[in-house]
Each structure stands twice: as structure tokens, then as C-alpha cells.
Image (cartoon, rainbow, N blue to C red):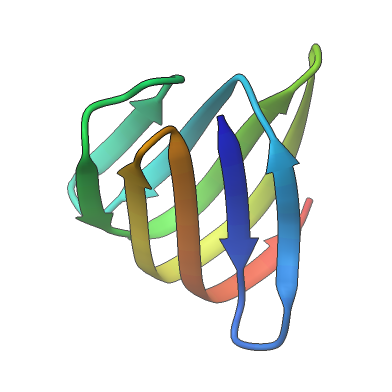
Length: 82
């Protein structure tokens, strides 16, 4: 699935991934390829994007996550690479 992580300053990640784990406002959510349409507000915590056997981790706070048509968009108010 295609994943994009966007901060107010720039696109932080844009590529293919096998899974995404994100801190929603009410707990962790996991997204796999072909996930049903889904949208949630983000809380504060670690966003993990699994790509080719490795994992990219980002500390995020605020914003939202949207999954639709095998695409995941994460638009966060604050993003820092780990």
C-alpha cells in the first residue's frame, strides 16, 4: 500500500509499506494493505511504517490518519523522525 506522512513543513515519508501502526486519540490502530476505508484523529506517540523488513519510526502529535483505496495518509501537526 502507498503511505504518505506529512508535517506542516514537508512530506516526511512517501512510499510503499506493508503495515502502519499509529497512535489514534483513543489507542493504537494498525493498518494493513487493502484495509477498509478508515479515518481517525491522531494522539501523541510513535507512528511505525513497516517497509521491506525494516521499520521507520516517527514521533507524532495531533492531526489525522486516513486509509482509503490502499493508500494511507498521515497528516500530523508535529512529526519527528526516530
